[in-house]
Structure formats: structure tokens, C-alpha cells
Amino acid sequence: MANIKPSLIIICTFIVVALAATTEWINPGTFFIVNTFGLTALIIIITAKAHFGKIDLTSEQNAHSQKLQSLGQLSSAIAHDFNNLLTVIIGNSDLLLNRYARSDNSFKEAYQIKSNALRGAKLVKQLLSFAKKSSIQPININIAELFTELTPLFSQLLSEKYKIVITNIDKDAVIYADPIQLEQIIINLIINARDAMPNGGNIFIGIVFAFINNKHTTEGYYKPNTSKIIEPGQYVRIEVSDSGIRIPKEILPKIFDPFFSTKDSSGTGLGLATVFQIIEKLGGHVLVKSQKNIGTSFIIYINHVKDADISAISEISPDESLELNSSDYNILLVEDEDSVRMFGAHALSDFGFNVLDVRTAEEALEIVTQNQRRIDLLITDVMLGSMDGYDLAKLIKLELPDLKIVITSGYDETAMDGIELKKHLFLSKPYTLKELVDSARKALRD
Image (cartoon, rainbow, N blue to C red):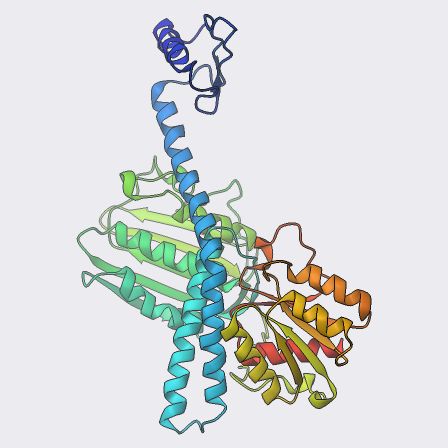
């Protein structure tokens, strides 16, 4: 306490006494105890050597953290309802697509509906991923195809003052990563390049193979970790460059720090921190080169996936490898959203299954206990009002030990804390007709 100015102690003491009658706590890090007469106050300041500037910085960081927490809560709250709506749109689009030939205009119109609904689903997943409410699902990704999908989004991020210039994109560049996280990397780097050129300019993008024969020393580049070495191997090299303001040398070591920003109140300080965090988890490398009158380049190296099988999967037709005689199986579908239930029952019936669909857990239990019909598979939503889908599955399992189960939800798996998911097949909303039918077949075959 010796290093704290007396004036600061006096000010804090007066604040404590003034608030003593109405509250027991002040901001985290400082608390007081008031005796029975309200005459004494004990002040404990965790950071004894903190000056006002550092306190302000901590306060700003806390504000950013609270914003992120609020975003996570909001995104999780809207995800369930929105994913139910998207399930209906995507599912009924699939039903329409099955009725028309590909040359028919109605097929093209239905496909447009489905494509845009899938984009909406991706936006929800991006929001959940950023708010850390979504699980990471790495797959083999063709970067050129991903970049094509992102192109419409660039026009929303950039005004007419900016132009994206493609220097080179290798069509065979494939990496193993979560597509949402890879999109975050590209989008954050483009936003960073945009903000470095307030008067407009060109953003240069190149995605190519990079084969490193010997240890690469990365001289002339800033690399945000202790190792300056990139091990020999086959990499995909992603470069995003601008012709804007140079990053000062003294700031370079800070640009990947969480909450560090040069954009005053308009920046969260999380864009480049997110990029570095994702690249590090992928086992990749990120380098920065910034020069006066030239601009800044961010260069990323990620291991290339060799001989990757990224063949296209049919948009509609369920997987033939899961084929079975559907008419031999009875499915109990439990879903409290009427439109989702109607689509599910219709889709499963179209592929030959015998379907009983009910709205509540009580109706499902009544069917099972009264032995109205043999049930081979239960497909149930998690949120059913009086009872969740997991409890319903446990109760029905007591009556039907051999029952197969598929759990569906508009929430991501990771958003449902404390629930053991490994026991059952999980189908995340929004799902397509193909995903629904394939899940049913897979559960029955396992």
C-alpha cells in the first residue's frame, strides 16, 4: 500500500462510506467491510501499483468481454428458433427439388430458395462460432471453392472505394480445417486491410502452394512467437496485402494481442487475435511485413492436404450406402414445432418409412406404453416443453431396450452443457432432407 498515493486512498474511502448504506460490493477487485456502526472501511486493491491509465484500460477490456458475453447469450437464444425456421425452408425446398427435373425453371427457383437458406444457416453458425457457442468441425476444404462462396460477402464489407485484386489462386489448394474458422481468417484480414486504407485502395489476395525444402528463417518478416522457423513441407500459402498505412515497428509485437486496437472505440481488438489463435491451433504460421509507401502483407502457411477426396456429394439423394428396406421400419417423430414436424414426417414417408408423428413427449409415451405399434427408431427434438428429448429417450428405452435414437436440436451440441451426447446420434438443425433420411438410416443400421 506504500506505493498508492494518499489522495487515492482518501477518495476510495469516501466512496466506500457513501455507498455503505446501499450496497455490499463495488467493482471487482475492490471490496469493503462495514462494521456495525458503519464507521470503518477496509479497502483492498488487488493491483497496488495500478495507475489510473491502467485501470481505464482494464475497464475497457472488461467492457469488450461483456459485449462478447452478451453476443454469446443473444446468439444462443436466437439460434434455436431461427434454425427451426431454416429447417422448414431448406427441407421443403428439397421436397420441391425432388419433384422437378433439373432443366425445369421450378427446379432452379426452388434451388435458389434452398441456396439462400443454406447461406442463412452458415451465417448463424458463424455467429455461434465467434461467440464460442459452436463446436469445431474440421473437414478437407478447397480454398478456391471457399473463396468463391465468400465473394458475395466481400461486396457487403467493402464500399466502391475498395477493389479486391486476385494475384493467384491455386484451384487444387486443400487444407484440413473448420470452414467457419477459415472464413473468419480471410474476412478478418480483409477488414484489417480495408481499415488500413481509409481513402480506399486495392486489397491483393493470393492462395498458392508453397513447398519449403529447407528450414525457412522468415527474415524480414515479423512472426508472433518465439520460433522463427517454418519446418520443411508442403503448405498452402494465403496472402492478404494492402497498399495502406504502414504498421509502426513498435506496434508490430502487439497487433495479435487480444483487445489491442489502433481504431479507438470503433475496434474490438479481437480480429487479428482471432486470426492468430486459429492459425496456431491449426499448427500453421502467420507472418507480417509492413513497409512505408508499400503497405502491409499478412502471409499464412497451413499444411496442405495431399490426395484429398473432396468429390461432390449429391445435393438431394440420400446416401445409397445406407440403403435398407424402409417399409420394414416404424419411426416415432417427436417435434413441437408443427412446420418442422410436418416436413420431417413428409420426408421420411416419401422414402418409404412408416411414420408416427406427435407434438409432445406425453403423446409419445402414450403410444409406446399402449403398444399401438412397434417402434424401431425415435427421432426427437431436445426442447419439448415439459420434458426434454433425452429424458424421453431414457423412458422409452425402458420399454424398448433395442430402440434406436436420433436427437435433433436448433442448438449446437456444445451449447447444451451437462448432456451426454455420445449415446445417441445427433442431428443439428437446420438439416436437409438428405441429412434427415441418412441419419435415420444410419441409426437403424448401427
